[in-house]
Amino acid sequence: MFDCIIVGACPAGATAAYHLAKKGHSVMVLEAASFPRYKPCGGGVSPAVGQWFDFDFTPAIDNTIPKVKYTWKLGDPVTIERWDVDGVWMVRRETFDSFLMERAQEAGAELKDKTKVTGIQLTGDAWQVLTKDGSYTGSYLIAADGVSGSMANWLGLKQPKPSLGATLEVKAALTEAARSTASFDFGSFKNGYIWNFPKSDGYSISGAFFRGKGKPQELKKQLHNYASKLGIDLSNSEYREHFISLWTENLTLHSKRAVLVGEGAAVADPLTGEGIRPAIFTGVKAAKAIGAALAGQEDALEGYTEAIATEWGKDMALAQKLAGLFFQFSGIAYKVAVKKPAAAQIMSKILCGQ
Image 1 (cartoon, one colour):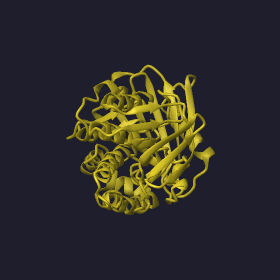
Image 2: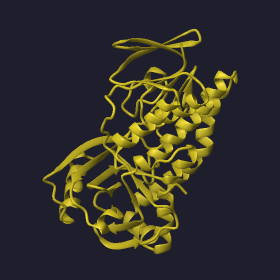
Image 3: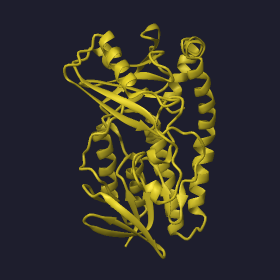
Image 4: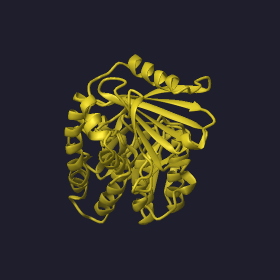
């Protein structure tokens, strides 16, 4: 029997596995996909995540962005030439996620990929996790199977309806100027925006609706329009839709002997859409809570829900209020809250995790 079974090898699941294994706990990670696997994502990661680990992320970083540019319908630009922070890491999720999982395995965690979980059952003080290839038993359970996973529902935990997002991956040769600048464009469509993150061999152009439902065809149209207006050749590109689970309220993230982490915990920033850093944060806190529970602390899992609410949810409540104002009056907000250099600098710091 394992001390903990983690369903999903996303950054949150891999983070929890790493920290639990480092403490000497037996950990099994079950992943439905074959690793390494592609995941639609802009791939921007705040360097602030480095504070939660004791290893160097350089091998997992595809590009580091020193500059950021904001535009309104591709016009009226403002550029932050030099941030007062380390910039933003650009990663490819197939590389970044695998890198994190490999560190967890080096610490002692086990990984079974191509292993889809078909059900869970709590028997006494142990979880039976069922797969097509057999079952696994663990004292505690971490659900890290994402916004479209089944674990939250099986655990009886509430999940808000996710927002629609999409990523247009473009293979292209980039100039040095293009490779060093992250771009954010507002006003192209209602209740959302577009962000363009350059990688070493192309662009990840993403967009999402941050309020309301939004139409998939509108999102696809605007991402392609954006690329075309910039003269980006789309002959070697791929478009994929995905969901973003934005923070809307503090949720109960634990049940008996189990916790919910990552995208399924709905912790993405409702103002910026940042999701990787908060997902990793939940993995760190979940590992701490499970470790405390294994040591006999009866209220440890309740403490996990409380920690996410107080240490993340408090800021997200403010971010949600700002998002409501921003997307309702986006034209005015761009001039007042983005275009002014001082405000744009603050926005850039937020993107870097400050």
